[in-house]
Image (tube, rainbow, N blue to C red; front, side):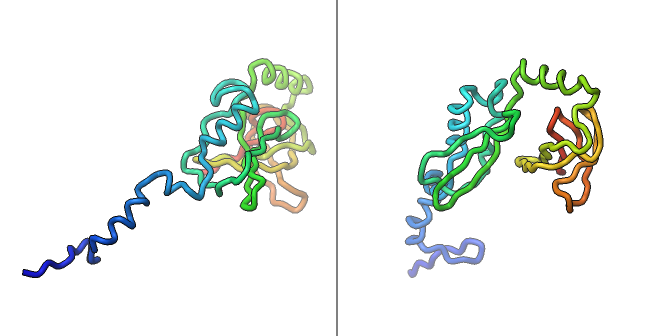
Length: 183
């Protein structure tokens, strides 16, 4: 009696293929070409001195679905922006990449910065340079821009990212930051 290979979804399953497929089940092999998101969390925590989720630390853990090229050297972490509300994490290697991690406002700093900006009645004034943050499920992108009108925290105002860009509506989250929710 002759044995034939088993058919799986129309494909012949050869017993010799199984040893070749087993390494793909190993998480270390699957993630071999990517930077571990926990490595980014550790770098930000070491830089800020605060754990994710705590005031002054990252807002949360880096999304485990993030697939950034493996970094051959140490991650470079620096402050981003004059208000130090975010840090920039960068891989300087041959397959370089850069991401920005938003921080939880420090208790004393956020109250004083809002109070000082509110002394004029507005958190953002027309013509002021601001950070425009597009925030979606599992991602955020930020860019510098300009406020096209005055507004207080929570107000929706018109903003644009450059002189030639189309005006967009964004909500003021705090002085110097306007959020555009995506999806």
